[in-house]
Length: 466
Image (cartoon, rainbow, N blue to C red):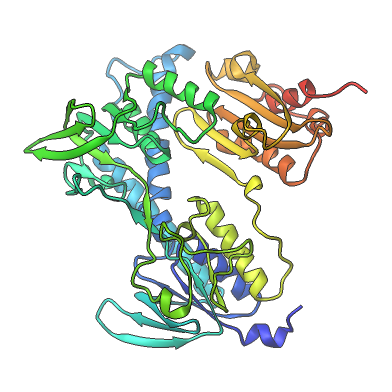
């Protein structure tokens, strides 16, 4: 254990105020370090200001539209006029909420004694950072350790340059004042699927361009099938196995040329084809920090880079592009640096959620990994159609899937497809983290009726009679 004297005198500089940076700053400050955060956008980084918080707020609005739209199925009459969304007000609210969240993080860090420097940071070596402020002023900071949490930015196609008016990347789309007549979404990964789902519920005609054979190609196949069925039912057109070769604007019309030769015409286009780590031209080579071929910072299980005294967290590491993973990487880095109890990051314990309608939440080992022979597992999938609470909520699609290690009955993975799946995955995530037995799920009381009851029921279905 490092002495408290050493902790108090540890000078830590963090580049980036996103989840990886601000969570690490809070932990380090609590452990007695002298912490400075360098951030040019605002605390919370892109996760709070241009990505997670605004997009999930937009999705919450879309879900409100869904509930209004299905109210008649509950016997509720909502008036003669059809519900509509005022996108100007929606975007004004979500950007205000993002700024408020950023301000709350800023204030919390300052209360903890963290110094916040607005500006862009560059490494001169593995102990020195040069900070350039917006006004051009430059200062140099010496540090005992550095944490790089510099994030990523949207990947752009050379033939599909965003203009912020009709052609967007995911950071630009919050400035629309009116619901798009026809939004073409290029990219069927998590970001593309979430925006396609949200704008469809808000009343936009949506076409989704997927280069793969299905939506969400990297996710649980059963979950992706449920979502594709929901998309089809809600009128979303999915163009599969084709790539967008070019996106061009002709006045108020956007034309998307596909690899098949077909040209799609819409009013707007969102290009969601992944991200690029913000690792160029920040002095990593001078500091001895090695990158992967894709430009991500190489890190080990406790967030160390190849340079002494330098750690990294978040999207710039390419581990998982999740705010929760960035935050965990940052906390682990500080525990390791400052001599607190530390356990390496375990990717088999990561819970993830896709905020489509319905939501898709996953944790641990996947059914695909079992099919590939990497794990041996018993798998049970319970459709929510038979769950009493789901019937009351008019939930007609979705399921709970539990994976248990064959022989031992230990819970090693799970999938939930349902409204608020992001909340329902937690007990399964806890079971995976603590290596609980399926009988632990089976024998734990759940509220009746509840969607969580299906998790316990899945545990009972996996019980092995001795």
